[in-house]
Length: 396
Image 1 (cartoon, rainbow, N blue to C red):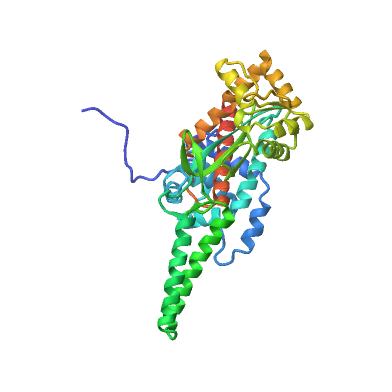
Image 2: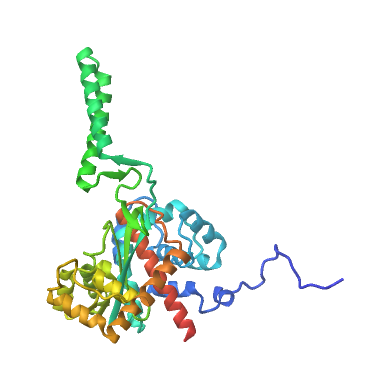
């Protein structure tokens, strides 16, 4: 009979091993720990002071758990709760504590703005390490499905019709029996609810809104419409996300200038070159880039067709190109150097989206509301940067 090594699951170790002895000193959880400890978290402290009730968990611990969860594609609170009890990396970051799923969810809900703002702290940490270097940035967007059903919608014409029907019914009841006070109160509440829905529709400027996530919009993705948000990123030459945001916009034309300004604000440095596809093109955008001294490799739709398919770009219809900024942009993109830079855009930004959506599950947001999904996208972007930093540090 063969002999095996001793095996006794119930036998405790005589000398408990240090976590680093088991996981290795270069494990990802230690990188997350190091980064969070280096960040300024005073915004979290000011909000915790007003929370009241039971003493809160340390924000550093909660942030480490959330960031590490996004790094390893564990994004739901119940799975996080389970992993904190079972996974050694999570147990180390939790410091032996066991926050439940409600506590984890409440922390993210209460600290949406500080979590989103923490992206800048992570970026500064990376730049101090000599990474996330500017010079060239590639900007792009993707559509991310919201946590809302497209079948549960408020439609303006339907709400208006129902409101008219309720008002007429309520008036008939009052005419038949003016003393029916209970029915009067119920009818009035229903009418006020419909009026509030109608006000919400008119304020949004939409003809239909989701009842589960009123902030979500129908955005176009690959020839179809999905109920969700537009997520935008700017990526540096060394493949780090240097800025990110979530919007309700259906097009990208107005996103280029705000994204460049956000890169400059968060990195404290202006990029010298910007790469983007034709969705970000407008004559105004080219003028703004020239005014800032930035080389913009952003083709108009006709020139993009030429660069991608080899067809010569002409004027739109019978109109000839007259804008001097567009003429200069076309001349720059038609050079061998310009074509090489525009081709580099795909290699910079699209693999990042591939990682976020395919490997990290960011095809759909878990939370609802613009502020909530903005914090979720920021966590995903921070986690991406940390895992890339971890990979580069190990290779060095």
